[in-house]
Length: 260
Length: 313
Image (cartoon, rainbow over all chains, first blue to last red; front, side, top):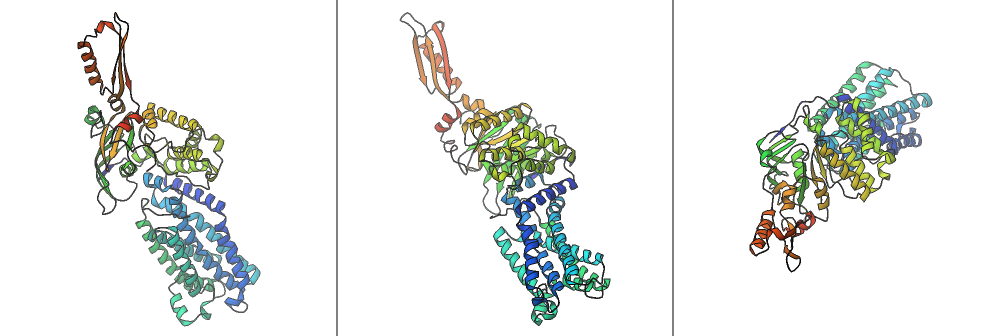
């Protein structure tokens, strides 16, 4: 099969396309409202109501951080939904026809969601520090690096989960299983030290474990870069592998079904 | 299907390579399934509008999807998009307005147009393209209305505007007038006429023969996953006449001769010659009228076309 096409002059640039998708995504997320509820109100309610009951006596700040990490994975959810939205609104046709750079498309879809995720993590960390006396023995740069790699894993996971599912119903079912199971065994609700041995063993396989290990080091730990970088390295590798799978396997033309 | 051939365009079209769309022996299959489209050959140059007729499920939408390669599957053959002076990226010069509305429901009409323009056009031309689409399609009244609050007609018009906001030279319209009221349809038909005059090429599918008759220069008939006839619309219309009337004067007063369904112009001429042989002198002829059938009538007469109007597929 041969389709003759010309050069790429006189068309939208990479960053213009990415900015276009990012603007649209922000507007949609803002007007949906529910992402803001799930990313801010639900974890705040959980952290305030469960608090030290799950994280241990006097560990309300740690509970706040754990719940924030757990719910930062709602970015997985919203990344997937952002991609399925193209089928719900039938706008996939334009992508399939014009084939904008995949990187620009994915970046535009992901950046607003990652931005909201970063705001959520920052806000919850600030509350833990200001209102619950959680110390920061490391630096703000450590916290930022942890948050960025964590969100990298989460958003890339959203793309991969989208790629392996055909519709929103299956996607959401798998996502909720992941959110609750990984959050539980990864030490996001109950810290590692208080978990049963089996959960601790399985929890090592979750990104939550490595994110919280780095966060614990940067906050109540000694604040050294070594352990933080080790955890960031694990998270970074996951993000790179998932991102490579996402970028390679993504095809505008593959049919999906947004059932909402 | 009098007047149509199996391969697209006129002999002159076949002879030159300067087309906005050239499809040669295109076949398409979903996965490992048998082909749903086979042996399609079409040529379309600027200013030509091809109306695609066919029964439900004949493969009209599949034809568009296969030409544009927008659904995964096995394609064979050759498709050349936009070789008629477009230069640059040819997909930039193609637009498709499918049957289903392609708009973000949470965004306003203007926001949707801007988004669609940003996908294709350089940043500096996005605002002007959006404004122009709003003006051309008469969308000013609803530009700031979220899509989910629009009526069906406004929604479809906004959808077509967003699909063509980048002013493509090759336009695909799948059932463009569905859900449009008379006024909006008239506006769209006028726009299509303007695009044609501007030298754009279009492929239009419709279940309304009036749409094809008003907007198209050529017709293609799709049946059983292939194009079974294609050619200029005037040739198809010229092949079906409802009545030949000849009024002749005479000593006993005027006489009207009537031949129902006289067939092609050539066959009508033979009838006239026969009447002359029967003694109706040419010098006494006061008038000759050949009544053309419209496309809807032709479709109802032709077993190959019957069923191509009515419901959506």
